[in-house]
Amino acid sequence: MKIECVGEKLIQAISKCEKTSMKHPTLPVLKCILFEAEDGVLTLKSTNLDLGIRVSLPVKVSKGGVVAVPGSVVGSYINNLSRAKSIVLETEGENLKISSKDCSALIKCFPHEDFPNIPLVEGGVNLKINAKDFVNGMRSVWYSAAVSSMKPELSSVYIYSEDDVLIFVATDSFRLAEKRVKVKKITEPVNLMIPFKNVLEIIRVLDEIDDDASVSFNKNQISFAFEEIYLTSRIVEGNFPDYKQIIPKEYKTEAVVLKYDFVNSLKLANVFSDKFNQININIKPGDRILSLTTCNSDVGENVTALDGALSGEDQDVNFNYKYIADCFQSINSDSISLQFNDKSKPMVVKGVNDRSFMYLVMPMNR
Image 1 (cartoon, rainbow, N blue to C red):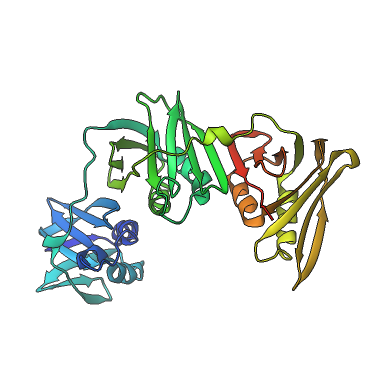
Image 2: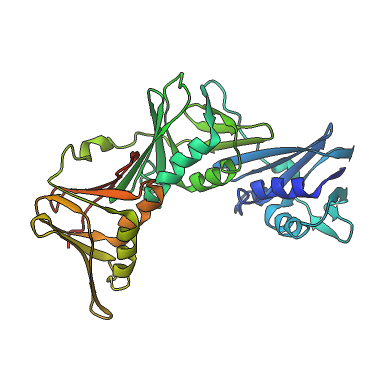
């Protein structure tokens, strides 16, 4: 193989593939990026068997061929050739030679015959969705998914459709985030779960795309296709919990506060939180009191009072600070609404001027 390509384009392509490659005890080639050159096109592929990506770019092909090169090595080296306008890749025996105007390197290749195929999604549902809209939905909820894979349906982002709205949901059973994204006409129903460990990489790749994506999915895989990129992920089997059952239909107390003030007060309070990240929220609408309290026997304690529009019954509830703080990046509103019922029911957080997002946090038992 011998090709010449634009340095910037090659760097961008490798960066998209590099993080998908991984070390594997029985299939060492998975830590590689596969380079395939033919007919004026270089195609890069990488996969961890759960997530796969294919990126194509135009190049000058003097001699076609296929090589598998460790992703971390070629990625680290190529990223430091950012000033190189032109980069030449050619095979020398069992090595790949990378040459620019001032530098050259030999990288040991792996047997490319062992590299697995990246599956094509066939016989499923096909949609056109703006990539930014899809990213917005996943980014708004992913942090609420369970990190552990003991319950795969909780360690995922659930996506389903209602009319022309895509709804993204994630929960670890302690908190739940729901984001509604208006999209172009949905011709077929959507109902699937994407594994948590794949979501951030999907966000990273799609976030650089401004156009519509061709999204296809069947019972096993989902794929996102653009002009030069094809990204595919495994879909989680099973059923997502019927989360709508736990959403309160009414509330006994509401506090409307400025998001900036509440977030800043949370940060102050967290300095004194204990090992359980416990924070107490005390509301007395009749006395116009809204306060956040934290106490740590080794550090001290803090009480922060907030201004807000308070209504309903008195509340005195404990929460995990981290679970509350995570949601505010997803709320596009200067003011937020905190809704309470009692110590055993979740607090509901919404934006006053952004009803597309809803967040539930369960109180702490202690």
